[in-house]
Structure formats: C-alpha cells, structure tokens
Length: 203
Image 1: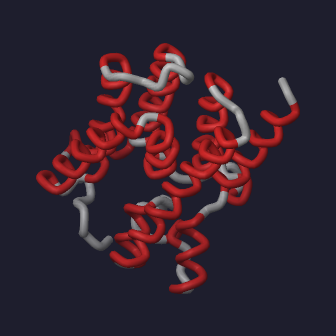
Image 2 (image 1 turned 90 degrees about the vertical axis):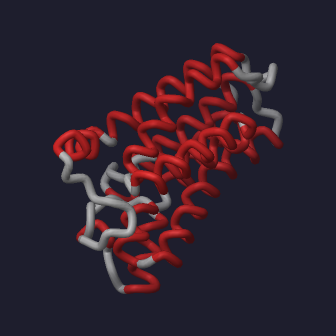
C-alpha cells in the first residue's frame, strides 16, 4: 500500500471521527446529545434535542466530513478501489469515532457526503426517496433504511464513473447499505412494534 493512500486513510478516519453533533451541542447549547433523546450523535437526534437550526448544521457538517476526504484524495490522484476505501474509512470513523471511545452515529449523513462525490446521480434519487418517505410517514429511520436498501440496486442498474468500477462500487454500496440497516436494528424493532419516534417529536 503506497504512502499517499495511507496518509489519506488516516485523514479520512480522523475527519470522519469528528463528533460534530456532540461538539455543536456542547458549544452552543451546553448539552451532550448523547444524554438526551435517542442518545445518538447524528443529525436526527440533534434536531430533536438542539432544535431545527442546529440539526441542519449537524447534518451539513456530517455530510461535509464525508465529502471532503474523497474529494481531496481524488484531487491527489487516488482513484478506483483506493478512493472507495477512503470513503469507507471515513464512514467507519463516524460510526467508530476515536473521540467517543469508538462509538458514534449511524453513518447516514456521512455516507451521503461520500456518495455525493462518488455517485451524485444516484444520490439525488436517494435523497428524493428519503424526503418522500420521511415527510409522508414522519419516520426518519424508515426513510434511512429504505434509501440504504435501494442504494446497491441503483448502483447495479445506473451509470457509475468507469474509473471507480461498477462492481467495486456495488460492493461498497452493499456493505454500507447492510451496515446502515444493522445500525438501525433497534429502530426497525420499534417500527414493527409501532412505537418508533416520529420526526419532530421531542422526547
């Protein structure tokens, strides 16, 4: 493995690990969002606990920390499966943060940032699906799981940048989809039992 790739993998993990929800909650509200709501560090819980403004900021920050590592790595000449690996490590950093004793969020917003750079055409469809489901059902978790499940299917049937490789990208999409669904397993249980928190509800 070349030195340049190793450097960018370290950068990717570090950037992914930055717990934006925790930092913003403590800095601007004096609140540790890990102690409130669903206790998750992501944008949905930030919205619920900190309010709409800060929830949107956390969403954008988490997406940006997913976008930047792959953007910078690609700019430096990293491509193909190596660029995909940078994206994967970024998402792992978010879900297993070095700053949170290797705990973290569910990876949805950070994955959005990674894939917005890698496969923007597919992400636009997923965002539309997410918004449609989230606002029609008021369940963000259902929207997240649905978009995650659709992701590898779209990668399989839609154009992907040749330099990434169709099957490389499909494998990556499948891994992330399964991972996101796994991280939402408690939400899925609550959905099945009819007691999942709805979007906008304050708990």
